[in-house]
Length: 487
Image 1 (cartoon, one colour):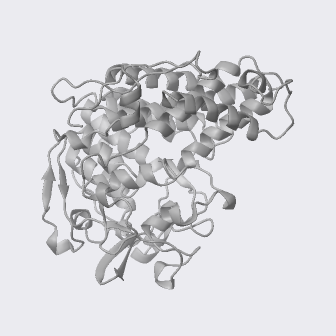
Image 2: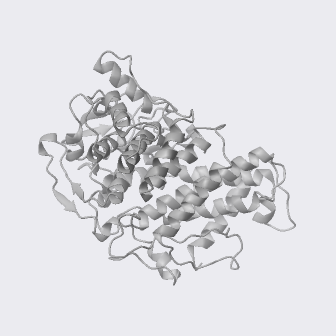
């Protein structure tokens, strides 16, 4: 096979037929074509379900796209006694970055299939058709957003004119070799324009019926806010975040009646210990049959038993721990630090985070992709940068996050907002992208002791390692693809 897009085409046809819950129309040959399967309701439903399954995969949000950005940043590191996974990413070794190319374009191709065939399908009500189309546009936008963050610079932080993002492919690849194309990379600006277009389309199709465990109108507004924040569209970021916050989807967990630090801490922990988080605007729902076991997120971050602390034991590796400068960033009395559990692994004293504590069953949790707290921080930052007060003042939103954490108010500044964002969203896969979008260096610290928090090394924003390497097979087989510099 000459190009990875061929694999995507095959996967789309297989998933469209294998995920269906009724017998599809058959053709007089040994296999069914996607053009037949996807013109029936079960075919489209199955293809949309496959998009969620791909997001759940360990190579994407089921583990890697949350863990690897934390390790590449100044938030987490691999401990000395480990299962020999992600050590290179923790050390920022050349080419040890995010690997999302195949997974991302596999999702995009299947979303393209949903968009193409949903207009032709029979057996779907108009309302259901709109929902499925909205989910496809949303997930395609999410995949493009994650790809362009990984393989291209932030639009506001282009280095030395290197403005290439990733290829935009909007056609469904279903017939080989007729549909195979060899696209070049679009610019970062063009990719962001496509993401915005897809999300705007999704906003016109979705409602909140299936929130938070499927894509919803609230989720589309929230992702639109996130994308706008990364693109420097401050007014849009504040506006869409405010719309998401007032949607009625997700509840800000605020232990206002908690009279002791212990009760406040316990109330905050329910964001992560509840099988379905009260703060979720959008989360990936995992059933017991979908647990990745020892390859899952909870296994990598800690050793967990359902509802029990790591001290009791449980399954898992617990390979990752906070870096020293993250531990030092917690203020005295911050209830969020109570999610860290002190333990000795091998002979090394470390901390495990308990944001993924196997809340649903052995070694698996629902994965929270968009939380209410993120939207408050997005609205605060966007309003601060824009000099506006859409929905609330930046000071009010900053105070809301800090008071909930058991901290006193502090004057609002950009640094104060970014610090709260780092701590509130720690271990959830945000930190690396926040450093890149702000043009910040990465200060690595290899010890876990707060008293030893001076970074051991600094990786400047201009270092080529901060962009992911495009897979070598893609570069070799597609003559129109330009590799990122340094590789």
